[in-house]
Length: 83
Image (cartoon, rainbow, N blue to C red; front, side):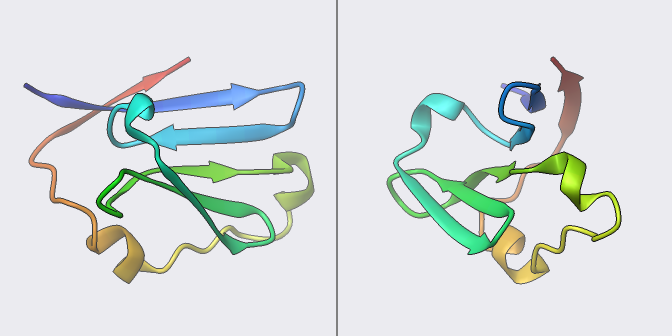
């Protein structure tokens, strides 16, 4: 089964969720920055990222350590779907 990258923007909270796996698998939420939360499954694998206060980040880049993303299970192919 092909994994799909899902990106959601929530105007009400000015936040964006980026999912690498099924959002229903989320068990752990870890804050790594004032504006970045990692979404993890029960085994601690990163399955998504939430970026909060998007509008205030226009002048500040969001940095996510590559080692954190590399720690999650590899995906052979990703298809992006916005919405």
